[in-house]
Length: 110
Image (cartoon, rainbow, N blue to C red; front, side, top):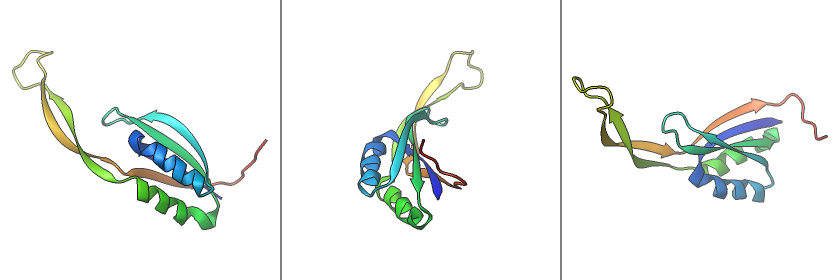
């Protein structure tokens, strides 16, 4: 048995959760926050039999696509007093999924 930890963007999470559950995967949803953009994301814990890992990964890939998004970057130009920050738009790639696939030594339901 494997445990897939999938970190996905919030806007992908509902559709992904429903798709995984329709395929019979057990999923636990956790609300988390990303470090880079400080944006909300979702971490899914997915228990998967060894022979279904590829199927689960394909299901995640089909929903979680990378896309470009504008965000605001802040900078403090040289010579400007502290607090004199300047904001400017920056294009970043968001979406997709970060996956960790771990071996499970023991699985119990109590």
